[in-house]
Image (cartoon, rainbow, N blue to C red; front, side):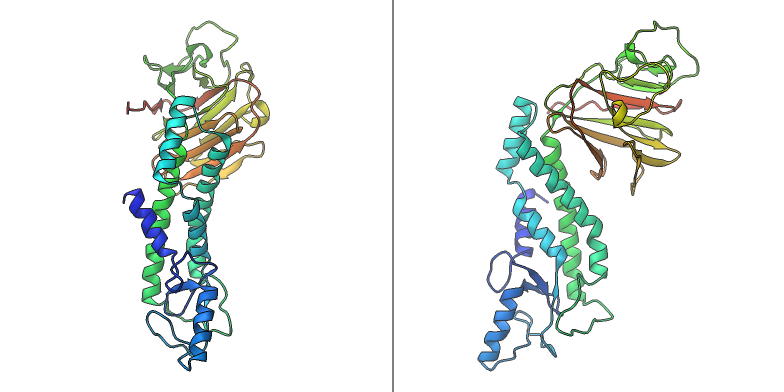
Length: 353
């Protein structure tokens, strides 16, 4: 669905049939139709004054035994997001600025990030809210045992719109970052790592290579940095991890320790997400479990140097994984760690647009 059609359909879904404006405090009747709370109450009051049925739905004319409705929290969240959805011109403007300046201004970026996080939270809570009936019924209403088919259809439509909106939000987030091209820095590579000729993939080898012991080289842990570092701007890249069994990707400070055993936490200059023993973790100072519905095969990483944020997402499904927030005070480099001898980590090469 084109973005313009998606937004139009969302706007229609959040329009009150009575006042024809975006709903204020949306509520759902037994029949499944949605209205502004104030509008439906005024409608019933006016019907009572005109000696008509004061407990009837305006559209389908379904009569109720008593006035009753329930808050539609899901629709309220969709409305809040729809109001903040960037227009096509705004998205294009973001893309133009990111191409020429290496990113967008902090306020614009924060707008997109909050927009993205709100969307994911709404999707995660959506089914729970629908199962709970979107809130407690009011004015002594009796809960139905079976959901109304029309209401279920409307919920399904709304769910579809939410998921599509979430994809569009991810698109807006990604275009606000400059796509970074990079290669691996051989001088930093652990001696047992095997790096491809184009320096875009790495796996663990079977033997330790005889290489100079540069001060930049990691000598104990199987990791390597990219040759290109960042000290400003906003950049994104993707790493194919495929079926690799034990890996970590992210960023590291230029000054991180290279010799001896390392601790991959922000306190020690690393901001990474790892896969270990079939589970995913964000290696914060207190490691946080990252739950993924699907196996991660390609990880998207977005670095906002000015805002001090590193965002991770499933590059295939666009699902947000984790965000680190800090203050960068020196040059930051993409970081790669692998213990897999079969499946390499591969830096995705972006197609020329």
